Image (cartoon, rainbow, N blue to C red; front, side, top):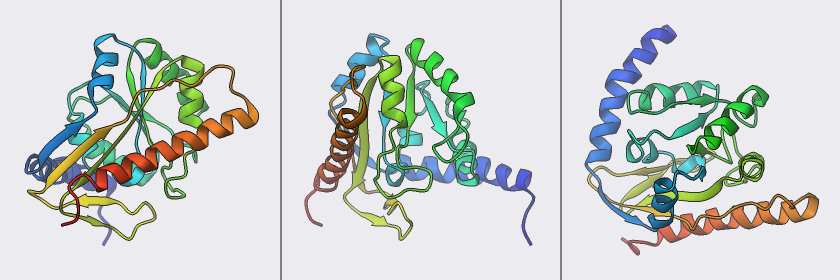
Length: 219
């Protein structure tokens, strides 16, 4: 028997959120490269934080109560994330590359104009795996925001068999959280030049994942 959606949401908000909090609290965390991001935050500069769908697990707890604004898909998976992290000080915007996003575009630009941090998952919600869609970069280009890559990995972890190869750290593991160097997207980039920049940023995010995975060496 399928439970009604309000009941499912209640269970996610109560049991699911508690499990995620305790699981995340059990990890021993090392943070690398956060200085550039902290500087932008201190100066109230607008930021587009970029992370792959498969590296989402640790982000809701790590960024709790910092006032950042995630862009979340209107899909059922997106609703699960909203229910899980809804009590941790986030202000959610709903939209994605596979859903009508025009109504959210002005809201995102308004948030950035106010010095906010938007979280964009550029291969979500359905992939392909680590294929960077251009929306986040175009948003940064139009708004003048700084892009900051983000990822995490763990000493002991499991990669799920989902399309995004979701990274699930083992409880009580050592976790490495990595920030990439901030960058901006030139207003002059168009056509092939913009595509080259998109491909460059895609490689940056992949390389940051690889650096995080190699952080603790081989088990």
